[in-house]
Length: 236
Image (cartoon, rainbow, N blue to C red; front, side, top):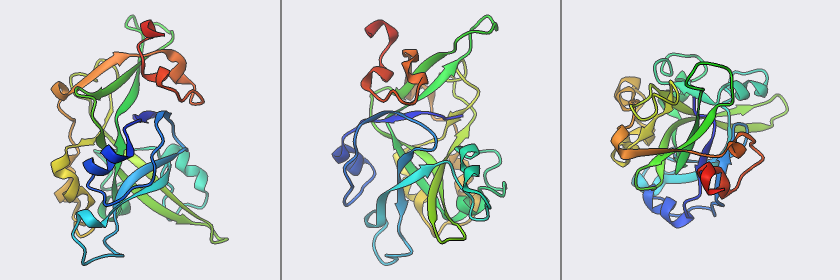
């Protein structure tokens, strides 16, 4: 799964990487957790259909934990922080969003927890995984809008996961789908509603372009949101 990630890259760099005409201020965050608000890039094609694709891109905030439009209770979102690449196109909770409401979730790192090697019970070791050059990247996501009987609305999102690459496999059996920049336009295009056109994008990112290092267990507590979360234990 993907249960924590980071985004400490400057607003200017994020805006350039995702080809945004403008972006709200992005405060640095080092331990983003489920049910919190996260930024995501969407294509506002319905509101500006004649504009060029990059000009339609918007950075918006969503509740992390997708609440399907048909849900009776929004608390279901706490169980929908991730969607599996193998079933996302057909699972009722995600299939509509997969065809019509795809998004890109900016990140510059994410965490996974490795179980003890001897198989015994014990504290898991957290790792921070990043691009080898430290740059920002895009997690493949979906978003949805839910409205309650009282008219209150929740816009929420989920992160798609896939099988791990060779770097992450020793740490965890899943990893988030990371989309190369050249795939962003296709993923965001609201006119592409054929699941078969975007399913091939849901592949593990190449291991040789990534780096992983152990970090302190202070990251285990979502209340800890400081640069210390990303540092090796020996640096603390």
